[in-house]
Image (cartoon, rainbow, N blue to C red; front, side, top):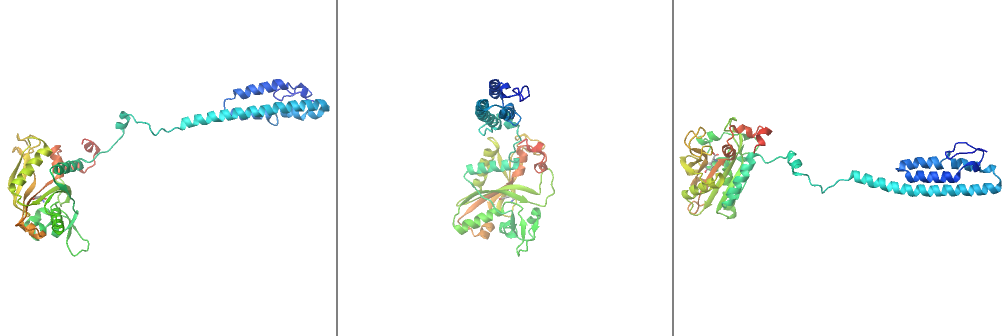
Length: 367
Ligand code: DAH
């Protein structure tokens, strides 16, 4: 009979040559010190597998006499059962520890607060300068008691011109050349050249619904066949104002423009009206404000006058009231309109308006 040592190596003739207690103690130690379930699997093969000392000792039992075989068999079984139980316990411990460690490693803390310096380093966008200017203007006018309204960007000839007292072939059409749309409609449709047609929509609605008076501002995009240069873009933004009420005078217009000028540009900024011409207002004026660059001292931008022109205004022409069915003997009103892009350009001393559309991030991020 072979004699086996604890590793199953042949050292002697029979099972009695195997140090069974030593093997049990050694295996127990090894299991206790195993540091992973993978190491444990190796120990299992080593101590209980087909080629292990225990298994090989089992095979030698047949050569023993019945009494010795029974005793040795019982002892081998005992050691094996003890080892199997020990492996099971240790495996459960190690598996739990391994699972906890992997959960810790995979943990995603959704409540984590990103530190301010990391957050501000991330690229975050903001509203375009012109959009900011539009929002500020709306705020100022809402603060003065105006409501905000919008109208379509494509208009019929009636809204953009005729109802505003600009009949076909009127010379004033020349300063509002634009893009005409061929939609197969009987009426002429065009991209609006100013926000003034929204006045017509508002008055028509108010007459229909019987909701006069009107105190509204109307911001939005406008289009003209202008070649882009430092002060012109073919697509730009205006804000229109319209007040229709009983007993409205030119004084109300002048006062409203002055209050707006100070509210938007700051205290001490002044406005003035100069005679002008628009087909839809009578009388008409161009309004100017203290030059934002030199504060009235006189500079190149204001041609040394101390003033810069902002927009047009005037008392609503009775012909416009007629076109929309407002009774001009009961109601009177004023209107004004000016460019938002132009305003933003002046306020921030932007040398060339084309910068607004060039999408140069170095320009845009300054505002
Ligand atoms: N619609 C004019 C333009 O685009 C600006 C304007 C002038 C608007 C006088 C008005 C106004 O409401 O009364 O040039």
